[in-house]
Image 1 (cartoon, rainbow, N blue to C red):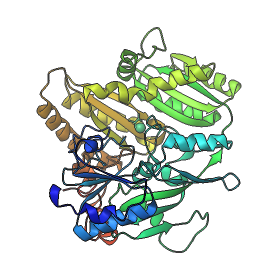
Image 2: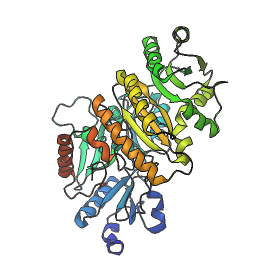
Image 3: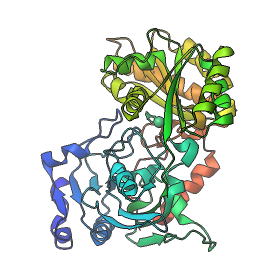
Image 4: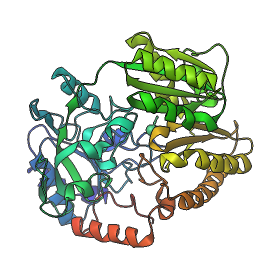
Length: 459
Ligand code: LAC
Ligand code: ZN
């Protein structure tokens, strides 16, 4: 197939500034931040304009060429990993901020703009783009939209979906759609924008977005609490949110902390505790002290550190945000699940029992956005454990976890997406009637089945 791709026909249609890469230049597009190895794609196309993307998709339709849209490739489910027969379409050369409307609080950007660039541009206008996570420097807005990215401030601000006022996308048949046009009110039928958000590149390619911006928040405080038991985390949450305006409520265990400290972070307390909570909230010294004293008196909290300045706040955040990176060299198996926040204590108990019984000798590392009902669990086998056997065991246990999630009405993927890795477990969260409707919708947008084939849907 390699030699036969009719690229000459496409080259003549692409604008100055675009590129077509081959061979070793395509190596970088092979993998994302997940454990999926991927294959070097036959070609990587770097369009420079919306018209280029339309030309690429129409070309792919004519020749039935599978396309894999590619953003910052910081995904954790293999949603952007190609096969060797795929052509990658990377949005990295479409990274202009097209407009900032400070009055309307919107920003229009090309899909390849990095999340942090959007955040910084909003801040330069005294505004906030509130979707935030550790991969902010590399991840791109188009990928954020395609995966409905969540992160650390969902508690206060919601998901990417809540900040997309409009988007342009090229469907799998090469049609350019302009969805919702940045309107606040628009009661004119199906809101296709929301179908595209979270569609993981299976319907088309997001090329531009108009994002909503928020008012800059008041000064924040960052507090790290030590807790004597995982079962007390939601008691701390209930008490803090009663009198504080929380923007983040994050949880991690001592096992997670040990990995971050081993990677160079400073241990926050002299002695270890079973688990920790990082809370961020609008500055309120009196409410914060009262809440802490109450939690300490009732034994829910045994120790605390309050950041005294921005550098200390970043230091505390690093303990939480650094977890995934500190574990990456151990190639953990990752779960990313959600239930309603009120169910977190009973869900944790069920999972703890399951993992205790099924993962003897494995390291089970809990962390996550518990205020959103979202837990990340990373599993690490003992050194030298055969990889195949490890993955087979994790697959078996994840099917059991799927059953538990079904009981709770929860989700097998809270924020990392289905991609390739979670496809076998989609059925625990989405009934077959829903998956069938999703397949039909994909067919409407992508009749030739060229958009990110093999992703999202169970094989
Ligand atoms: C985090 C990533 C793994 O929350 O979603 O650190
Ligand atoms: Zn997360």
